[in-house]
Image: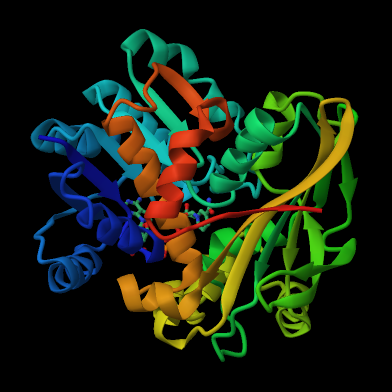
Length: 396
Ligand code: NDP
């Protein structure tokens, strides 16, 4: 029996549950646990309708280590897939260690009261995971996740050294809403409003938030779009793990409409994470904003168009300069038709399922804490083609 526990019943959790259910030979029993059990029940009903499989549901506060340990001991999964929020990473890693279960997530830890994400807190678990003989796989979403695997694949097969890396994330979809975020609004806005940062010749260079842009011509009929330089978490591990790297940057497309709304919200203080007094109680403006914005999961039926996320890599092969671009194009409508979610949740949930599958089948299994590029990219790349996220290598 190979049991998997999925924690978090949001947009991504829903995709992970549907995709695991599609592979009964690996995921023989599935449990979905989250803070609001009615969301787990709604996902379970959709999984039953689409795949004919029944998944178990549980109410869980993932901040409570003892509660998670008790659930893990009762259900005894091989792997816990954490698709709750980055705030839950450390309590869930603690619970997995205590109960002897492997761990996987899609976003690195972020302290709730400081908009700052770094791997140091999770890398610090390496020794404990090694001595317990357990594995933690960090960042098995799309970016981080597939982007790290694209780099490892390029390093293994296409380039002897990667000198310049540009990760370019384009959402060319349209949900028709005046303003909405495609994944958790609180996490999304905290990330976007940070100062930009890229890595060059061994040092981090800072830029003002969204102050640098370029236009990139995306494939598959998407065409030219303006992309903004941002800091993104995979840069930290890739700067450490890629051979010969001289520069690494991350870019994301935003429409003028999105940026105008964001600017206004920032100017009036609605994106702040500092609590304010309101009618006798303390509220965090950004959390209040999240409460009034559309739920990312509700954008599924509304979103049309495509995403295109890829890695543009310049380097050397056999003593000659070479530039390659590896990317995936995902259709919002096709994702919705298959699992009832838009492409942002889909492109995150599929790699989470694949990472767990490789761990559970022993293809990717080693004690310790790992980032995706530290493991053999070939089996992961093969599964991407099979499970809905085919990739293309283009020589430039
Ligand atoms: P959602 O906000 O839609 O879902 C998060 C879920 O986690 C909600 O169901 C929420 O419960 C639940 N949750 C929050 N706190 C707890 C808790 N203490 N205990 C139990 N459950 C809890 O977010 P998404 O699905 O959009 O994103 C999920 C994760 O995926 C995030 O960490 C995000 O950063 C990451 N992500 C990664 C990407 C990548 O490419 N690597 C891209 C996109 C997202 P409730 O319903 O009660 O609020």
